[in-house]
Amino acid sequence: MAIDDLIKAVEVSGLERISEIMERSKAEAAELIRDAHAKDEPIKKRLLADSKQLIEIERNKLLSVARKESRMEVARTKSEIFQKVFEEAPRQLASVRERPQYRENLKVLLIEALEDLGNSGVVLHIDRRDEALLKDILHELMINSDIIPDLTTAGGLNVYTRDETFVVFNTLENRLKKAREIYRPEIFSILFGE
Image (tube, rainbow, N blue to C red):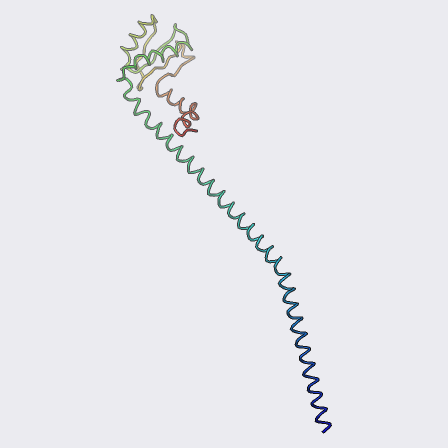
């Protein structure tokens, strides 16, 4: 029976050895898992931080594009409103002669032009509808000038030197055109509070 005891002893010894190896393997596996988790956490944090940064960059790009599109739309809308104001202005000018202050306005336009060109040797080009009114104003101001009713205008006049070297365009349409260009910032400020 010594062989049986020997085989049993070898088996018991083998089982103990297998058990030790299994325990050591489990301990090593647990250690490896702990090490992996320890190494994994900084990687996770770095990847998360990188992802957050990429998301923030993309968000900023989208916001920038949205702001730019919004500014362009606002500018386009403001420009359209500005255009509509100046499209409406000629319609408003059509009735300016009917207003009580038109006589005074025509007088001011005449005086402005004469300040640039002088009182003598000028020719006044006007709309036929203003001829009697302008003659009355010239008489009041004691100015003697030639009047040529060859314009079609909502109001105002053009004043030429006799040799036509110099001219002052002072019709309401010319003034409106100048105002559109010169006073654009002020008009935008009035319309939009800028």
